[in-house]
Image (cartoon, rainbow, N blue to C red; front, side):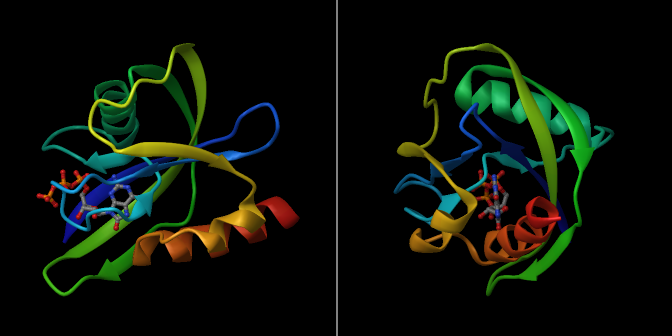
Length: 130
Ligand SMILES: Nc1nc2c([nH]c(=O)n2[C@@H]2O[C@H](COP(=O)(O)OP(=O)(O)OP(=O)(O)O)[C@@H](O)[C@H]2O)c(=O)[nH]1
């Protein structure tokens, strides 16, 4: 099982950041929460800080882990760990993705999001509704 962390980043309007995978990536053109694989001997928080810096040139502070989603794709099984993060500095620059969007939680269903992320969105609705 591959351990993957993804960042839940909210802006001042309460909208969440999603990024679109490029044509060169696995699951091309799907939308996801930015993040990536945790490397050996790396903590989840170190991994998300590194990935967001590499992908978006933003410095984030990880604040809280949410419920892990285990998901089987045809070619791999992942454990996706969503982490609530706050932006500390930087201006968003797309180093790897095709596009980004800020959307309210109820608007996320309109996007073609990855399977595991649909589950994350459902869990988030519960977090934000309570
Ligand atoms: N970054 C990210 N990856 C996700 C999310 N949800 C999800 O299923 N994944 C999957 O987790 C895997 C690892 O992410 P990655 O960004 O490091 O993968 P990659 O395409 O660079 O490498 P890979 O092609 O070897 O899998 C990918 O297969 C990706 O599709 C998500 O919200 N964020």
